[in-house]
Length: 351
Ligand SMILES: C[S@@+](CC[C@H](N)C(=O)[O-])C[C@H]1O[C@@H](n2cnc3c(N)ncnc32)[C@H](O)[C@@H]1O
Image 1 (spheres, protein in one colour):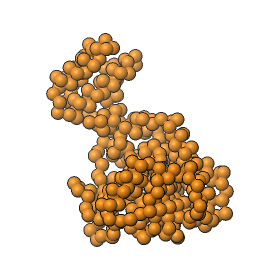
Image 2: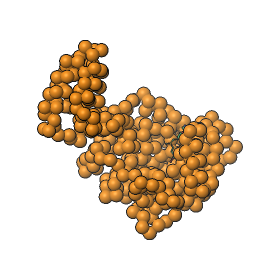
Image 3: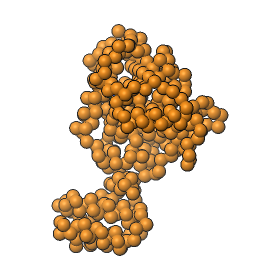
Image 4: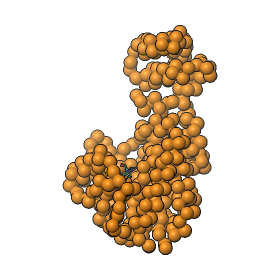
């Protein structure tokens, strides 16, 4: 129900705005949005939804308004049509990156349909639906498979060949989807993460799959590394905007100051990665976001400051190039059930 609340946030705002005005208290609008979600998406009896809403609005002395708005909407319930109306701020950010109308329209529509889940096989399989490894996740995860989005798979599938050295450090590794896939592609992984909770999930995944990975609970930014590496994966913490189909709340909770904080950490993490990267080594920067501040701007800022980096082109017909990196193009996965949106940039340290 919470997912429906956020998925239809803007649809409901539009309906509510026909019966309220700009001075209606925000808390009353929230009560109305919750009520509409329950009225249209739950089996709860109509009278109890209206009664609860009226009770909740008494503290603002707006019970009459709430009662009248809900009764008016109910009278026209059959005429109300839901459009694919996207929260304006979220739409603006999406439109900045995806300029083609067919791609935009498809991405908007995916907010309103239940996303498909995928599972990835540890070895190549003839009956896979994509990339010899990807299967739809029905009820149960198959033996020798782990849960991962197809976009996530595509990122690793199209970048792993850049890494000449198979000893790879994954510096934000948990819960481990990318580490596990890379290990299954022949890499020898050192997986680090600072979160005990997330590492526990990685541990559980590894025991179920009966595979071993060298795991270290380490704060990447504060840890002193004695070794240097040729292959680094940085799947940085971010706003997770690209996972909006599964987490529709991100579409309305975009907070510029939070995104700027993410950007600061993302740049610090790239700079730390560059410190422990050998000359000639490769760093892949990945985020499950399409916010310019967390993607192309991050890489821009890094390459302006560090003249020792070369950005490489990625060969994938499932991605769109924007300046110095690539975004997964969900339209390319439409027939399979869509995908989350990731950004990836490949950096080589040349001096
Ligand atoms: C996007 S998730 C990584 C997902 C993972 N690569 C995968 O494919 O399953 C980001 C991870 O970064 C970790 N993280 C955040 N700050 C960190 C830091 N300073 N040092 C190490 N890990 C950190 C978080 O705990 C989180 O697990």
